[in-house]
Length: 320
Ligand code: GRF
Image 1 (tube, rainbow, N blue to C red):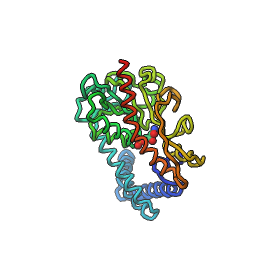
Image 2: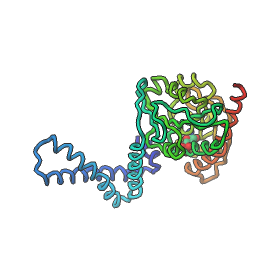
Image 3: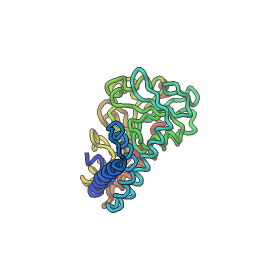
Image 4: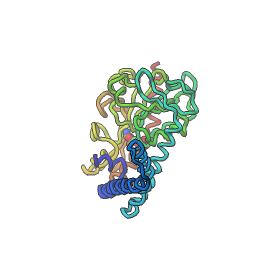
């Protein structure tokens, strides 16, 4: 759990400790102040005291953690943490949530689009291949792919599929006016894998770009050889469960490798296992850190992924 937090917040172990201490002390201070403030009023009824206490601590909490973050040296972290929380709330309030009756998943429709209860099959000419990008991270690859196909007549980035509320890629989708399908575990793994929603949105092809869930058989069966993924290493090495993000680069540096790279491959039901379509390499110099390697790999991804997608889709179109 601590490792995941370190990775999520991009901090080392020592900083993680200081952040957790700030959360704990800030939380206690907030509880203490809440009780003191409540004590100023002579309210006997628990039905009023408890909700009032909850409201007070909700208001006080950001101030308390920011205050404590100053002596712990974590002010910058908490300032951006609170900003992110604020913008998440803003995004959510701007989005109208439509509950799908048959699957129970939450579908987010941007307010500028008609709220039909399904992902609108909007966009370019009907002959264009409609791509859904599955992403749950920052979305830098998604952005490059969107930029690459912005003026394309033959390929339309029609949908962003995401399993993580607050992910950076959702901001990209909003700016680019691309509909978003926010998916949940249960229907994805044990339901229809969102096949009905993807078909309703007339999705022809799926691109995974920083999507960490394993793709279920229902989805690969519905899109045979029409799902591709990018992995930040030279598969078959450094792939499989748990090998994602910085874990990959850390393992490669720790093993003393002199080369890494990217792999673009078809997706099957095993992590990082499908047939390889394309690989590109980069050298690891002495002294390169996992973060430096991540930069090199990202550069390779941004350079090659959009072009390879174009080639795979063109090949598919010829077979149509
Ligand atoms: C990329 O490194 C990709 O290889 C991996 O997830 C990362 C996504 O990065 N599958 P971003 O969200 O596109 O910046």
